[in-house]
Length: 371
Image (cartoon, rainbow, N blue to C red; front, side):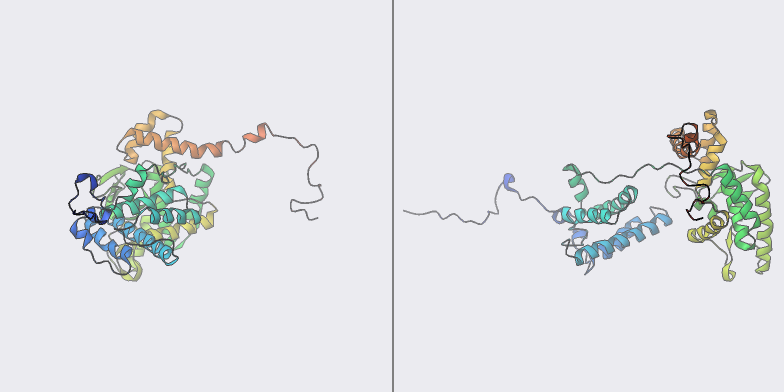
C-alpha cells in the first residue's frame, strides 16, 4: 500500500486563491527596487525624487521641498537610532514608522497646519517610491491631521500710522528700503515675494502700475501681470525711496541696478533674500512697537478698500489677482474674523460683569502693590 506524503511547504503551483499578497516593494517597478540608497536611505532617496520634480515646479518650491525632506529624514534617522522604528528606507516605511512619526509631531507640539504640511511632503515622497502606506491607512479609517483655517490679520489704523511714522525717521539704507517696500506693499497688495523680486523697470509711476514678474503659481498656472497702485496717498514714500535708491547706486559706483530693491552688498547686483527683507521688517517692528508680517499689508489693503461695501469685492478680487471671486469672498470673510476681535475689545465696558464700589487696591498703592 503506497502512502502519499504531504509536504508542509507551500506549492509553487497554487491557483489564484492562494496567491501571496505582494509587499509594496514587490509591486514597485524595477528602477525603484534596484536603487542603491546606502546606510541612510531616506536622505539618499531625496536627490532621486527631486530629479523628477526639477523643471516641473517653481525653483522656490523645489528648494523648500529639499529643505523639508532633509529635516524629515533627520527625524526618521533619530527615531531609528532610538529604536522606535525598524527602517528609514522610503520603500519599506509602513504603518509602524508612520505612527511613530505622528507621535513625534505630537510630542514636539507642532500645530495641525505644520503637521499637515509635513505629512503632505512625506506622502508625495513615499508615492515616488511606489509606497502607498498613506492610502492604505486612510482606507483603514485612520484620520490624519488637517490644516486649520487661521484668521487673516489686519493692521489697525493706529498701528498703520505708527509704522509709516517710524519709516520716516529710520534713516540709513535699511530705512530707505523699509520706506519703499512698506508703501508699495500697502499700495498694491503684492505678495512678499512678488515685490522683493521685482525689477526696477517693473514700476511705472506715471501710469500707476506695478508689473508682477514672479507671481504665485509661477511656471505652472500663473504668468506675469500688472496691478494698479491704488493708494496715491502713500506714493510720496515711494518717491522718497526712489531718490535714495538712485543715490545709493551712484555711491556704489554703478550706473544702474536691476532690481527695484537692489542688494548691492560688495558691489553685486542682486535681490534681497526673504530673510534679509524680514530683518529690515523686524527693525520697523522694534522701533514702532507694532508686530506685523509683510503679507498683512495685502489683507489690510483689501479690508480698508471694501470698508463694509461688499459691492467692491469684484474690484478687490481683480486687484488681488484671485482667479475666482469665491476665493476673494473667503479671503475677505477670514479678514473680518481677524478684525472682529479688535472691534469687540471695548464692548465689555458697556456691560461689566461686576461693578466694584471699592477699588481692589487701596489708592495709596500703585498697580504693582508697592507704596
